[in-house]
Length: 75
Image 1: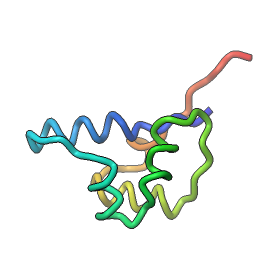
Image 2 (image 1 turned 180 degrees about the vertical axis):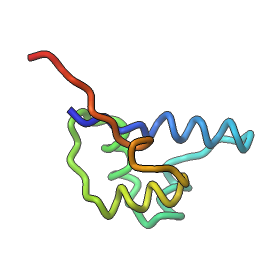
Image 3 (image 1 turned 90 degrees about the horizontal axis):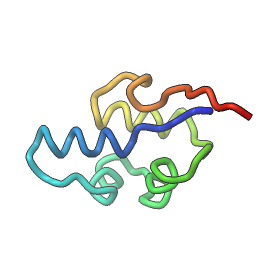
């Protein structure tokens, strides 16, 4: 299963900048709908596009492996 690290990235960015970073802020900066961000962060197994992943990489200035990671799940 692919696990998205969006919540962790928000927390890290907030810590680095000493402020709270919100979905609304990311949405305005990237053009990604707030609902989509919420689903990526909270819905297990959410399916998104490479375009959205690209925008998140640009916003957080990270590589794709810092946004998404493979997690082996037992049946």
